[in-house]
Amino acid sequence: MSLNPLTPVTDYQSMLNRIFWFTSGAALVAVWLLRTHIEPVGGLLETIDFTLELDGERILPVPGGYLVPALAIGLVSRIFRIHSVVAEWLGIRERFEIDVIIHELAYRTGVSLDDVPDEHLVRRRYHIMRHGFYQFVSGRRPQIDELLIERALDTWSWFWIVLEAAVVLVLTGFVLIACGVEQTGVTVVLAALALAAAGLPTIRTQCRRYAVAQVRAIVDDPERARLVREAFEEVIEQPTIRRAA
Image (cartoon, rainbow, N blue to C red; front, top):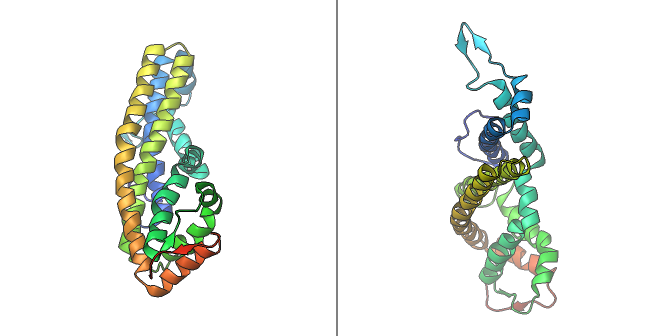
């Protein structure tokens, strides 16, 4: 795993690595807030404060009582992919796939979704996405321009970074409020929500632009467009073809 959080994202694993480092950074801020304002937390973490030194030069940039918990939170987020859990819980991924990718695929292959209930698309979106999108953009040898895929992953990485940072800070604010540090806790929660409200819609717009570009690249090939139509035909009852591909 690269130690540079700004290393270009080239695949899903490198995207997860970038998210890990930035979530650990947000967690470091959270640990500092908790240690500063909650005395028992500060006393507990002081027991693991340490620095690694070599020839009198400090290696760790911050004491272990800050760094270890922050990295632990980042590791938990990396293992359990908290951004994915939150995205499913909030419907972020579901709505993006349906409203952007699936509707764009349908439009560009001549499949009408006008009479298809949204609930039906929600139930069958995994099939459509698997056979109409991911099979062309995933794996070691994607069938469209890899630069498009890498740019999309890079943009999504920043979306998930903002989301996870907001989650970490909101939870930290709630802990502060529960421990009687109301003013600081409310400030942290509001700042985190402001970060999410300002950053997420802007980044999502960019994600949409790259998703549409990927769809265009997919259906530019007649054989791929045929496979996309077949993916719709398998899950949509009597689809209406608006126009030839």
